[in-house]
Image 1 (cartoon, helix red, strand yellow):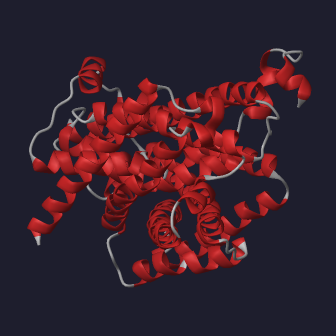
Image 2 (image 1 turned 45 degrees about the horizontal axis):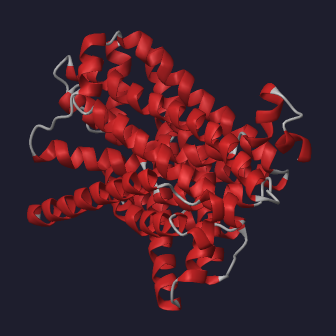
Length: 412
């Protein structure tokens, strides 16, 4: 470690030990909920909401950087710092909402993985969900072999998702001019587009990833001095940039493919099983298979990340821990029940993303408060510009959530 931080180690060899945490946290940014919201947005509004994906990703870079920095500066994760600085009732309330966030996350991940198995192999959803649960246990087993094994396994699955949608973009032949217009021309078209934008935001900026990232960096490489901690954070920021750019490209690719194939052909595709069928009809069987493989890999990888987040949330807020495998067993029950009673999988995915968007402020506001506190952060305390950007992001997210809540209630 001393050589890494002293400058005697050069190039990629110096960077490699710091790569990994952002990729694990970044899996949350390409989970099955993103498939549902991005496909729905692209098929309904074409390229129009691409700018929302871009803005959400820029927000994610800043938010994950703050989370990683908190772990590096304090040697503690966000729930632990919250427990130390908030009254017990507040910490307990934050733990409850954190567990609800994890439940919503697990819902999206298991339904996505089960749907991937159903689409690829024709296995009914309920047996598919059970198989997906077994797969998630296998991924957790990698954690027992060390964090490098887990990171390698998750990075491999991320690569599968990237490859699947990279090829999909090539097959769909999107309009470059319309892509650029969608990326850099902010606009909405009616209330439904705003609600979809909130769903995209909820699917991109994930509260459990905010908690998780601080835990992944808190003891990975420990800086003994302020200077070492600053250098560690600089390397970790590179990790964040790489992981978030990959996640942003994947999310944009999902929306672009839906716009180029479905919107262009007048198809308003709201269900992922319908999307699978239409990929086969419009492009060919291989395109549909790519979509199913990407969905399956995304669901399995993100399910393990959700379990890790739940463990950190419980341990940090209330100093309690249950075995990871028991937690995994408990958290598979709600999605299996939802599948068993016949709820539309895509509808459940979109609802889960809306729930997640409401959990963001409860993780984000404490994070900004703590990283703005010099007593907690030392030399890694936020700059004034960072604070302004962070509070602006929090205000935008909270405002969107209030609007979304109002629109949801008025529809009932």
